[in-house]
Figure 1 (tube, rainbow, N blue to C red):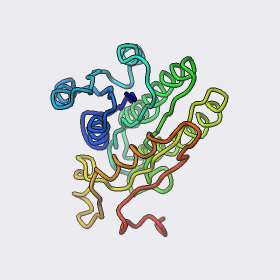
Figure 2 (cartoon, rainbow, N blue to C red):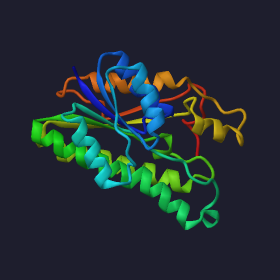
Figure 3 (cartoon, rainbow, N blue to C red):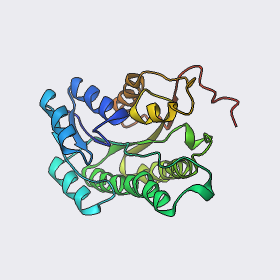
Length: 231
């Protein structure tokens, strides 16, 4: 049985992905702060293992990874949007929170996975970027900055992982129907979206490749989103 850890597994893209992997016979480690939501997922999927932890807490994350044991794939997914506005309107505390989750938290998870995979002879890390890793939407300075940084993390892990049979790729997902997008839609009622299941299926494809093949970067989005030509 293949094994994956999914961060941010309690809702949105993380939850849809975790459930799809469990349905496809993977053993799935569920990391998020909301223990009740993780228990709910695990109750429906015998292969799912709740691992409540805050991705910004290195000790809690280390305990979660140790409890899960060997893993084939990390889906490094946990992230928050933060307050919308121009840079002079964003409280420093909000900026620090977004950086803490979206960058520091993803670094912690990747570090733990990389160490485990290096010791066991290989594995795969899939980072959740965003279209914001390429172009911003208005008022998203904190989120966009962290997602650009994730592209650098992906490239560095890909390079440093080569000697150890560790593949790293990034999935940049457009507007998938999640609670985060529902919040953003309030200011953009005509927003083009896609079913979150398409994002989950794309991660499953990336994770299912043999380690001698890698999707370095994948963009999956609603066809009519104004991404190409936007800016």
